[in-house]
Image (cartoon, rainbow, N blue to C red; front, top):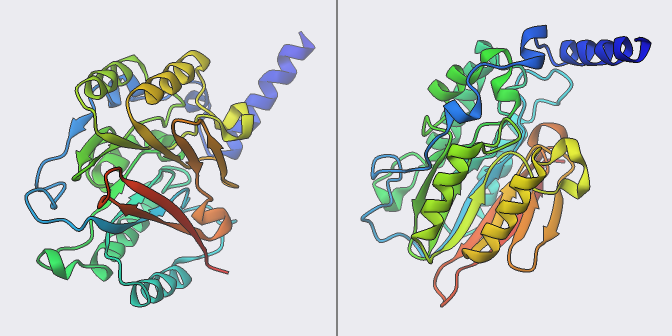
Length: 296
């Protein structure tokens, strides 16, 4: 009896430390099986490079775990925008879009999402693309577990482009998949739809999501269902996946599965890091590398 009471107290106070209500510590509305049942293909408005002669060598900006609303994190924005401006001025390769790997909000509060909106709009506006009609640089999001706190799903959906949590687009030799693992799992509907999409394509694939597959073997920071994780690794090995890129585990990690590589990138909020994904589709096989830039 004492052990059960002790465990209950741990869970209760853990929920309070995350600014969750007791109900949301044990149950959350909008589960993944309701949020993400289909991996939808983006249209020409959502992915504006469709039908245009897109560069074959280009960069993508990657951020993870920003956690707006966490008062323990430094305010990195001023340093970040100055650093990004300097990077673009000293590198000739075009930076075409930004990817944010979840946990933009710390508590899921409306005020935090207002900050998220302003931050992402500034990224888009300050990095317009003259070669593509001077459009704002697209910012693509995946949802994280903190984004869902305090019923934050609807606010995330309204705020974070492209306003869906499971989707993909294609470039010349690549398919880019953005998956919803914010509940620690893909859920069966999303997983089965992903398998269908993969079955119909022989292109090289990149995966972007919040939860790592492995995260140095730390269970809390990995996908929660061992069977699902094993199925995904098997699927990726058979379907030309080359990159699995995630956040959630703030210190970052790397693992080579022989057939594909997993990069868990370091947190923006905790460590002041952002990342540049360098892509080259000019050769017979697409190539990539990830560069990490520190704000300190």
